[in-house]
Length: 246
Ligand SMILES: C[S@@+](CC[C@H](N)C(=O)[O-])C[C@H]1O[C@@H](n2cnc3c(N)ncnc32)[C@H](O)[C@@H]1O
Image (cartoon, rainbow, N blue to C red; front, top):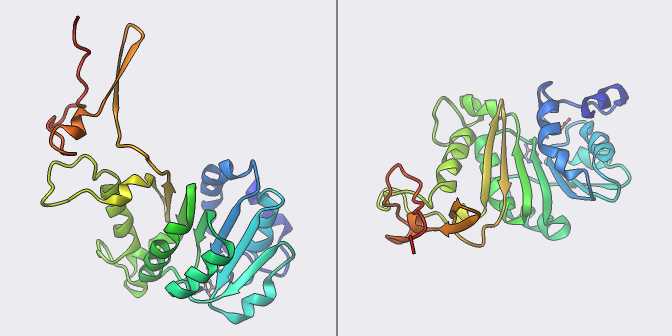
């Protein structure tokens, strides 16, 4: 188990909340079958570098970034550390060019909402189809000193909640209020844990459809989305129509 790594730490201190280990196992399990491209924002004393190296399959590309130039010395064999600001789009573009696209991105950097959003928006296009973007220590979204505060629209938690709306923007009846958001085509799930938001990318090549199956015959219906453009006319129902009787 990942938490067993704590028995193996050396002078390079590792700092993570205890309950994260369970979330990591649950979310990252599916990245253990073949080498992946991983990016962690935030190095500090370097303790997570050997942990992730041990955890992910041999041959994975493991990239770490930090704003502190001293972190460069914490690089170990088979990993790469780059120095830069997680809120700097040029730095992130160069990073993605060098090491992307990524399967898994973990933001454990400044924990300032504005930075978390900047990194997310600049790195999301460099996340692979099927990839996962995790932002941790999101409790800072409730701290004014980190650009947060309860229901502060500018916080990352509130940003994450809006991604839930984006994911469902296929379905809304209220085009004036909330038009279709193209990012809905890429969002498969937005999962909220205590202090961690995990956003999963899965590119949809066609709009959502409902299935109606009877006597072994299955019909695919997009009526709910097609009848008035994408706007549902079925207020509250799932839009499925039974097959016409012959
Ligand atoms: C919580 S520590 C990282 C801990 C490390 N991931 C671990 O598991 O032990 C946060 C790190 O983010 C770095 N940081 C702060 N602001 C940053 C920024 N704007 N861009 C990149 N890194 C930043 C800090 O220098 C610090 O080393």
